[in-house]
Length: 246
Image (cartoon, rainbow, N blue to C red):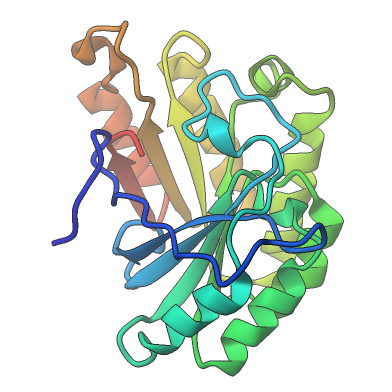
């Protein structure tokens, strides 16, 4: 078992930089060396990329919203070489990892090293997602809300449309993926969550997860889905996961 932070997720370790990151360096912000929760069924390292154009009200990594390059990709690769045969793959997370122009190059290098490649994305850049799919083994797509609440939650217009296009790209490609929703009753009631889940299942989503939002101001009981809702969600998908805040 590795150390965990106060939110229960693996503590983020940062690889020492090999040198000062130049202005054109990829925006690498940190590394979780071993995680069994970021890619279901796989033991993976998680590489965090800084930069995200959305401003979700509940953002769990606000320090990764602005783009910055602090850590050196050759140093991370050198560490990963020492884990060949021990890790199943590497997941790019963020921030929004598709904000990184060099992501296809990084993914290609990982595949050449024998690692599977996973991606956490909010679906902000559908075209970039489509161009990267050939190098991905798994995708975790955030579905933030239903149509009614999307733009208010992300702070950006047309965000629901972008996520919807990205979802369709994944469905058409047949790549292994999971949709995930971070849930709080203040922005998405149980009834709206279930209606959204119905639409996802109708569109062809097979794997879905609800993640509880981290909150210090709301009673814990208020942030739990009812047993009835959980049964209904479980019946809609091939796999359904109900997770603590991540």
